[in-house]
Length: 341
Ligand code: KG4
Ligand code: ZN
Image (tube, rainbow, N blue to C red; front, side):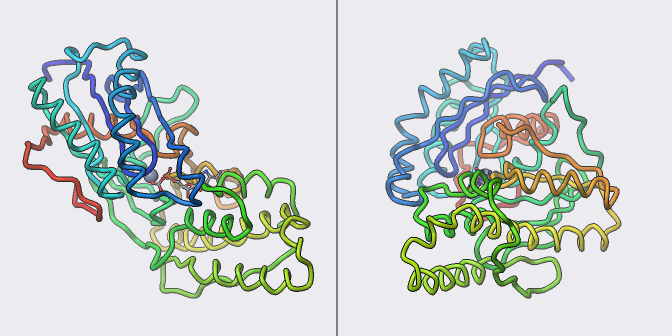
């Protein structure tokens, strides 16, 4: 290889976070994330507003990432960007920006799949943690996806199961909205759950095929339960917020872990990783840690800043593609749906 140090500028704009990062091989030199606050007012991400905010944020965010890393644009070896999946209008901003920059600087362009990047975040250097050995299973849980993925190399991903309706993050966010909590509700449910009794209420669990998930029934049963209780006591939700959050979180975790444990048993793989925004959840982290002892799992949890959407994971994914010479040209288009690479 010509260089021993490869600098990649990563750009992420798939949803409501505008992010840019600079990596040197698998080390992150800067990871700037600008979270759009405007969506809180609407109880969910408004695609048009997200796209507009990305346009406002992208140049300052990229500039800040370069400044923090202390790397001038001229030193960047390639530009990596999230091509999809995500919101098309949001993806278009990062994709167009990356294409234009690549053209202007005459630097190679690398497209990155957002979901694979969440998994490859495990290969970001971390002085406190080792990197997983292949093959491993990764539970990828975000606002848009819930999947169990068998990862056999940096480029070999096999989806063993996925949600047939809502994602786990959506279950957190939609139930939070039903309780009147602001968007995104996942972190708030996590916070209140730590103060509550997780066995106080029982909610329905799905019955779907092998390693697949379903969360829409839980949301509906949660809604009906609260409506029934509010008829008896108007302030039921506020009176029981902590217990409701704890019981709801336990149900979501039971659903997630039931299939994850089944996947581990079926494949004989006990190296287990977690990725995506919901992996920031403290309950999930605790339960994974306890499975290290109970089930002899080897557990891998990314650093907090690389769990939710971030460009650090895009830079490092781009680095692996760079090593293989996997570049794209100016005909590349953003893609809202799952893409091949
Ligand atoms: O990966 P991510 O940042 O964006 C997507 O690609 O979707 O994930 C965002 C999701 C949201 O649904 C948010 O509520 C959830 O991750 N989330 C959490 C926590 N932190 C973020 N859910 C539960 N507990 C948390 N601590
Ligand atoms: Zn994500």
